[in-house]
Image 1 (spheres, rainbow, N blue to C red):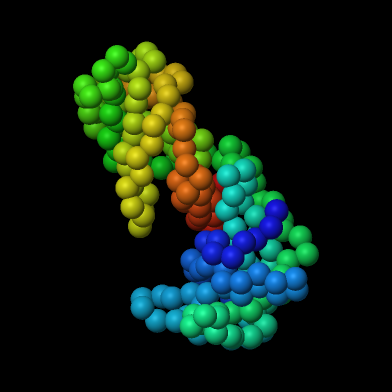
Image 2 (image 1 turned 135 degrees about the vertical axis):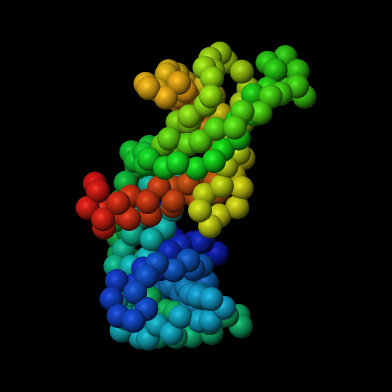
Length: 214
């Protein structure tokens, strides 16, 4: 797996005053070094210094990849402020895309289309129960079955709306609440949308681990 110029990544700082996860972009890739954009927080550059230990996290359709390193120096690339890192000898594969499903409750709209005439539809107000990069389980007010064209529309915290076509897998009743659940598979899903969901799932999992909940 190779990192590419222009790729969106996360830069993880595990110690010091600027500990945190920061979105960034790869500005250039060389044989022995690569340059990432200096992260910005609240409109200001995060003043990370040479020698600071960091980890770079990249997202692919099949998995999350990471390697640990340190900042070598600060540079300017085509007018952009960057941080130079050693190029990785090997990227650690953290998990496969379909491995992790996290529980999360978010408002969601389920659009169910007429199987013959897609311009006819009904909208069901629902909530997510759990989510992965491959599919979603939702809570709905009434039982839903059948092979109808469907779409889900929802937002991840701090992110824009996601609208995905999906396919019914199975469903059932939620005991004691008089409501129902439906499992849906995203079909199809674009690479960028997969990465957005995968990033959210990974960060949610990390938060739960930090709290000792998993």
